[in-house]
Amino acid sequence: MAAATIISCAPVKYTYRTETDLTGTKVLIGKFPRAVLESDSSFHWFGTGYGRYTPDLASCGLLRTRLSDLRFVLFIGTWCSDSKAEVPRMFKLFDTLKVAPDRIELYGVDRMKKSDDDAETRYGVTLVPTLIVYEGKTELGRIVEQPREGIESDINRMLQKAR
Image (tube, rainbow, N blue to C red; front, side, top):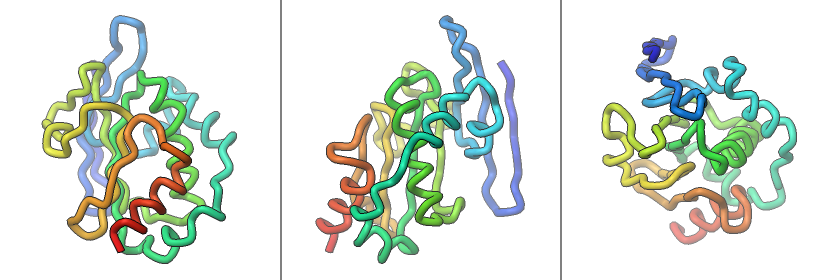
């Protein structure tokens, strides 16, 4: 089991640990930077999925206009097939729309969907991936496991309901 604490130039502190589960899968637990997914060969699925996805920008109308007011909290399991499929797509969308990295919080959980600091309990997360969309301090909605229509469409629907 390895532990890491990284302090970035921004006032965000990442404290996470890695462990290898019984299947030999590397698991990230706690709040961590996206760079870990990009740089660790254990998470090759991230780059593969990211490269294969093309965001549906036609479904991003309202999302584009309100983007600067939004904050995203994302819980993933690096062992989870839904996380491996959806998380790279979410980040490709974020990058395409130029979402500032400090507007995205990323948490890893173990197979019991637990983190070391109870973040999953504070946010009411029981399944992964879970993307929670906030405008200010107000939760607008969630995408849990898989989007209903598409990431872009689902977020746009959340924004329409919040009008």
